[in-house]
Image 1 (cartoon, rainbow, N blue to C red):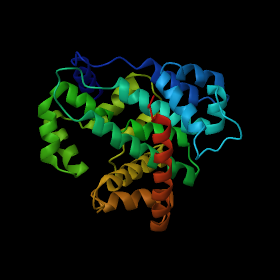
Image 2 (image 1 turned 30 degrees about the horizontal axis):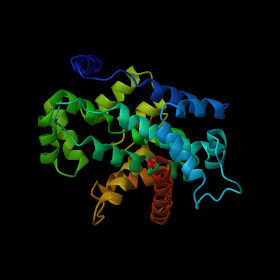
Image 3 (image 1 turned 90 degrees about the horizontal axis):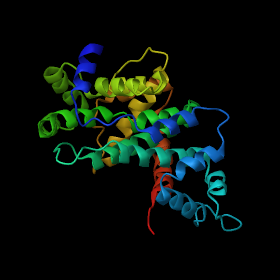
Image 4 (image 1 turned 180 degrees about the horizontal axis):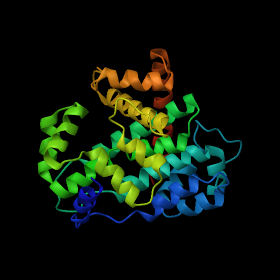
Length: 283
Protein backbone atom coordinates (compact mmCIF):
# COMPACT_ATOMS: atom_id res chain seq x y z
CA UNK A 1 0.00 0.00 0.00
CA UNK A 2 2.78 2.46 0.92
CA UNK A 3 4.44 1.93 -2.46
CA UNK A 4 1.15 2.53 -4.27
CA UNK A 5 0.51 5.72 -2.30
CA UNK A 6 4.03 7.00 -2.92
CA UNK A 7 3.72 6.31 -6.65
CA UNK A 8 0.39 8.12 -6.82
CA UNK A 9 1.65 11.16 -4.92
CA UNK A 10 4.89 11.41 -6.89
CA UNK A 11 3.14 11.58 -10.24
CA UNK A 12 1.19 14.71 -9.21
CA UNK A 13 3.27 17.48 -10.77
CA UNK A 14 1.23 20.22 -9.08
CA UNK A 15 1.54 18.80 -5.57
CA UNK A 16 2.84 21.50 -3.20
CA UNK A 17 5.89 20.93 -1.04
CA UNK A 18 5.38 20.83 2.70
CA UNK A 19 4.22 24.32 3.74
CA UNK A 20 7.11 25.61 5.84
CA UNK A 21 5.13 28.04 8.01
CA UNK A 22 2.45 25.41 8.62
CA UNK A 23 4.95 22.81 9.78
CA UNK A 24 6.84 25.36 11.88
CA UNK A 25 3.63 26.34 13.59
CA UNK A 26 2.62 22.75 14.35
CA UNK A 27 6.09 21.98 15.69
CA UNK A 28 6.13 25.14 17.79
CA UNK A 29 2.83 24.41 19.49
CA UNK A 30 3.89 20.87 20.36
CA UNK A 31 6.62 22.32 22.55
CA UNK A 32 5.58 22.75 26.21
CA UNK A 33 7.94 25.74 26.63
CA UNK A 34 6.89 27.64 23.51
CA UNK A 35 7.51 31.38 23.60
CA UNK A 36 5.08 34.14 22.65
CA UNK A 37 7.91 35.81 20.71
CA UNK A 38 8.12 32.77 18.41
CA UNK A 39 4.38 32.88 17.75
CA UNK A 40 4.50 36.62 17.07
CA UNK A 41 7.34 36.07 14.58
CA UNK A 42 5.26 33.53 12.66
CA UNK A 43 2.29 35.89 12.64
CA UNK A 44 4.39 38.53 10.91
CA UNK A 45 4.21 36.30 7.82
CA UNK A 46 0.65 37.58 7.41
CA UNK A 47 -0.01 41.23 8.37
CA UNK A 48 -3.77 40.81 7.91
CA UNK A 49 -3.81 38.05 10.52
CA UNK A 50 -1.82 40.20 12.91
CA UNK A 51 -4.36 42.98 12.38
CA UNK A 52 -7.22 40.54 12.99
CA UNK A 53 -5.72 39.36 16.29
CA UNK A 54 -5.13 42.94 17.43
CA UNK A 55 -8.67 43.91 16.41
CA UNK A 56 -10.16 40.96 18.25
CA UNK A 57 -8.08 41.63 21.37
CA UNK A 58 -9.57 45.14 21.47
CA UNK A 59 -13.12 44.09 20.64
CA UNK A 60 -16.13 44.44 22.89
CA UNK A 61 -16.08 40.69 23.54
CA UNK A 62 -12.52 40.84 24.90
CA UNK A 63 -12.85 44.07 26.91
CA UNK A 64 -9.20 44.91 27.72
CA UNK A 65 -8.59 47.54 30.42
CA UNK A 66 -6.49 49.58 27.97
CA UNK A 67 -6.11 49.47 24.19
CA UNK A 68 -3.77 46.68 23.06
CA UNK A 69 -1.38 47.81 20.32
CA UNK A 70 1.38 45.19 20.49
CA UNK A 71 0.94 41.72 18.96
CA UNK A 72 2.82 40.17 21.91
CA UNK A 73 0.23 41.59 24.32
CA UNK A 74 -2.60 40.60 21.96
CA UNK A 75 -1.50 36.95 21.93
CA UNK A 76 -1.26 36.97 25.72
CA UNK A 77 -4.73 38.49 26.02
CA UNK A 78 -6.50 36.35 23.40
CA UNK A 79 -4.68 33.14 24.38
CA UNK A 80 -2.23 30.75 22.73
CA UNK A 81 -4.84 28.21 21.74
CA UNK A 82 -7.18 30.60 19.93
CA UNK A 83 -4.31 32.31 18.11
CA UNK A 84 -2.85 28.95 17.05
CA UNK A 85 -6.17 27.83 15.63
CA UNK A 86 -6.65 31.02 13.64
CA UNK A 87 -3.11 31.02 12.22
CA UNK A 88 -3.21 27.33 11.33
CA UNK A 89 -6.61 27.62 9.64
CA UNK A 90 -5.47 30.58 7.56
CA UNK A 91 -2.10 29.18 6.50
CA UNK A 92 -3.53 25.73 5.72
CA UNK A 93 -6.27 27.16 3.51
CA UNK A 94 -3.74 29.41 1.73
CA UNK A 95 -1.05 26.77 1.28
CA UNK A 96 -3.14 23.85 0.05
CA UNK A 97 -5.09 24.99 -2.99
CA UNK A 98 -5.78 23.62 -6.44
CA UNK A 99 -3.42 25.06 -9.07
CA UNK A 100 -4.84 27.45 -11.64
CA UNK A 101 -6.50 25.60 -14.47
CA UNK A 102 -7.30 22.50 -12.40
CA UNK A 103 -11.03 21.90 -12.12
CA UNK A 104 -12.09 19.88 -9.13
CA UNK A 105 -13.65 20.18 -5.71
CA UNK A 106 -14.62 23.50 -4.20
CA UNK A 107 -11.58 24.02 -1.98
CA UNK A 108 -13.12 26.99 -0.16
CA UNK A 109 -16.05 24.80 0.90
CA UNK A 110 -13.67 22.04 1.96
CA UNK A 111 -11.62 24.36 4.18
CA UNK A 112 -14.79 25.89 5.61
CA UNK A 113 -16.00 22.43 6.62
CA UNK A 114 -12.53 21.45 7.88
CA UNK A 115 -12.32 24.52 10.13
CA UNK A 116 -15.74 23.73 11.61
CA UNK A 117 -14.74 20.10 12.18
CA UNK A 118 -11.49 21.24 13.81
CA UNK A 119 -13.26 23.59 16.20
CA UNK A 120 -15.69 20.83 17.20
CA UNK A 121 -12.83 18.36 17.68
CA UNK A 122 -10.97 20.86 19.87
CA UNK A 123 -14.09 21.48 21.96
CA UNK A 124 -14.48 17.73 22.50
CA UNK A 125 -10.79 17.44 23.42
CA UNK A 126 -11.18 20.09 26.12
CA UNK A 127 -14.18 18.23 27.54
CA UNK A 128 -12.41 14.86 27.72
CA UNK A 129 -9.04 16.37 28.71
CA UNK A 130 -7.16 15.38 25.56
CA UNK A 131 -4.66 17.56 23.68
CA UNK A 132 -6.71 20.38 22.17
CA UNK A 133 -3.96 21.51 19.78
CA UNK A 134 -3.51 18.03 18.32
CA UNK A 135 -7.28 17.60 18.00
CA UNK A 136 -7.67 20.90 16.16
CA UNK A 137 -4.75 20.18 13.83
CA UNK A 138 -5.94 16.69 12.92
CA UNK A 139 -9.49 17.95 12.51
CA UNK A 140 -8.38 20.75 10.21
CA UNK A 141 -6.34 18.38 8.01
CA UNK A 142 -8.73 15.40 8.05
CA UNK A 143 -9.88 15.90 4.43
CA UNK A 144 -6.57 17.01 2.90
CA UNK A 145 -6.61 13.78 0.87
CA UNK A 146 -9.55 15.14 -1.13
CA UNK A 147 -7.37 18.00 -2.34
CA UNK A 148 -4.67 15.52 -3.39
CA UNK A 149 -7.17 13.38 -5.30
CA UNK A 150 -8.63 16.47 -6.93
CA UNK A 151 -5.16 17.64 -8.02
CA UNK A 152 -4.60 14.27 -9.66
CA UNK A 153 -8.05 13.56 -11.08
CA UNK A 154 -9.57 17.01 -11.63
CA UNK A 155 -13.24 17.17 -12.48
CA UNK A 156 -13.53 13.37 -12.52
CA UNK A 157 -13.05 13.31 -8.74
CA UNK A 158 -15.60 16.05 -8.26
CA UNK A 159 -18.11 13.94 -10.18
CA UNK A 160 -17.27 10.96 -7.97
CA UNK A 161 -18.08 13.03 -4.88
CA UNK A 162 -21.36 14.18 -6.40
CA UNK A 163 -22.38 10.63 -7.26
CA UNK A 164 -21.44 9.36 -3.83
CA UNK A 165 -23.85 11.83 -2.24
CA UNK A 166 -23.62 13.04 1.32
CA UNK A 167 -22.67 9.72 2.92
CA UNK A 168 -18.94 9.62 3.62
CA UNK A 169 -18.91 5.83 3.60
CA UNK A 170 -20.22 5.76 0.02
CA UNK A 171 -17.44 8.11 -1.11
CA UNK A 172 -14.84 5.97 0.60
CA UNK A 173 -16.15 2.87 -1.14
CA UNK A 174 -16.08 4.61 -4.53
CA UNK A 175 -12.51 5.80 -3.93
CA UNK A 176 -11.40 2.32 -2.90
CA UNK A 177 -12.92 0.76 -6.01
CA UNK A 178 -11.39 3.33 -8.35
CA UNK A 179 -7.97 4.05 -6.80
CA UNK A 180 -7.33 1.17 -4.40
CA UNK A 181 -7.23 3.62 -1.49
CA UNK A 182 -9.40 6.43 -0.11
CA UNK A 183 -8.92 10.11 0.72
CA UNK A 184 -8.16 9.34 4.38
CA UNK A 185 -5.31 7.01 3.43
CA UNK A 186 -3.73 9.31 0.83
CA UNK A 187 -4.12 12.33 3.12
CA UNK A 188 -2.51 10.63 6.11
CA UNK A 189 0.31 9.34 3.92
CA UNK A 190 1.04 12.84 2.62
CA UNK A 191 1.18 14.18 6.19
CA UNK A 192 3.63 11.42 7.14
CA UNK A 193 5.79 12.31 4.12
CA UNK A 194 5.79 15.88 5.35
CA UNK A 195 7.09 14.72 8.71
CA UNK A 196 4.00 15.30 10.83
CA UNK A 197 3.76 13.02 13.89
CA UNK A 198 1.53 9.97 14.11
CA UNK A 199 -0.69 11.69 16.66
CA UNK A 200 -1.87 13.93 13.80
CA UNK A 201 -1.68 11.59 10.80
CA UNK A 202 -3.40 8.65 12.54
CA UNK A 203 -6.66 10.52 13.27
CA UNK A 204 -6.67 11.70 9.64
CA UNK A 205 -6.28 8.08 8.53
CA UNK A 206 -9.02 6.77 10.82
CA UNK A 207 -11.60 9.58 10.82
CA UNK A 208 -14.18 7.39 9.06
CA UNK A 209 -13.56 4.29 11.19
CA UNK A 210 -16.09 2.85 13.58
CA UNK A 211 -13.67 1.27 16.04
CA UNK A 212 -10.26 2.41 17.26
CA UNK A 213 -7.55 0.51 19.14
CA UNK A 214 -4.36 2.39 18.17
CA UNK A 215 -2.37 4.53 20.66
CA UNK A 216 -4.14 7.65 19.36
CA UNK A 217 -7.60 6.03 19.67
CA UNK A 218 -9.16 8.87 21.66
CA UNK A 219 -7.96 11.54 19.24
CA UNK A 220 -9.19 9.41 16.31
CA UNK A 221 -12.61 9.13 17.94
CA UNK A 222 -12.94 12.84 18.75
CA UNK A 223 -11.87 13.87 15.20
CA UNK A 224 -14.43 11.42 13.83
CA UNK A 225 -17.13 12.85 16.09
CA UNK A 226 -16.03 16.43 15.33
CA UNK A 227 -16.42 15.70 11.62
CA UNK A 228 -19.92 14.30 12.13
CA UNK A 229 -20.92 17.28 14.27
CA UNK A 230 -19.56 19.64 11.61
CA UNK A 231 -21.66 18.01 8.89
CA UNK A 232 -24.74 18.31 11.09
CA UNK A 233 -23.86 21.92 11.92
CA UNK A 234 -23.62 22.77 8.20
CA UNK A 235 -26.84 20.98 7.25
CA UNK A 236 -29.94 23.14 6.84
CA UNK A 237 -31.93 20.44 8.62
CA UNK A 238 -29.52 18.41 10.80
CA UNK A 239 -30.35 14.74 10.43
CA UNK A 240 -27.10 12.96 11.43
CA UNK A 241 -26.23 12.31 7.83
CA UNK A 242 -23.34 10.02 8.74
CA UNK A 243 -23.96 6.58 10.23
CA UNK A 244 -25.34 6.97 13.76
CA UNK A 245 -23.40 3.84 14.67
CA UNK A 246 -20.10 5.63 14.08
CA UNK A 247 -21.13 8.61 16.20
CA UNK A 248 -22.32 6.37 19.02
CA UNK A 249 -19.09 4.35 18.88
CA UNK A 250 -17.02 7.54 19.21
CA UNK A 251 -19.23 8.83 22.02
CA UNK A 252 -18.91 5.53 23.88
CA UNK A 253 -15.11 5.56 23.68
CA UNK A 254 -15.01 9.21 24.77
CA UNK A 255 -17.58 8.54 27.52
CA UNK A 256 -19.95 11.21 26.23
CA UNK A 257 -23.73 11.22 26.48
CA UNK A 258 -26.20 12.84 24.10
CA UNK A 259 -26.55 15.78 26.48
CA UNK A 260 -22.78 16.30 26.40
CA UNK A 261 -22.84 16.52 22.60
CA UNK A 262 -25.63 19.10 22.69
CA UNK A 263 -23.60 21.15 25.16
CA UNK A 264 -20.46 20.82 23.01
CA UNK A 265 -22.34 22.10 19.97
CA UNK A 266 -23.04 25.33 21.86
CA UNK A 267 -19.41 25.62 22.95
CA UNK A 268 -18.20 25.07 19.39
CA UNK A 269 -20.55 27.76 18.04
CA UNK A 270 -18.99 30.24 20.47
CA UNK A 271 -15.48 29.13 19.47
CA UNK A 272 -16.35 29.52 15.78
CA UNK A 273 -17.39 33.12 16.37
CA UNK A 274 -14.12 33.67 18.22
CA UNK A 275 -12.13 32.32 15.28
CA UNK A 276 -14.11 34.39 12.80
CA UNK A 277 -13.12 37.48 14.74
CA UNK A 278 -9.45 36.54 14.61
CA UNK A 279 -9.63 35.86 10.85
CA UNK A 280 -11.47 39.07 10.06
CA UNK A 281 -9.18 40.79 7.56
CA UNK A 282 -11.05 44.06 7.14
CA UNK A 283 -8.85 47.08 6.69
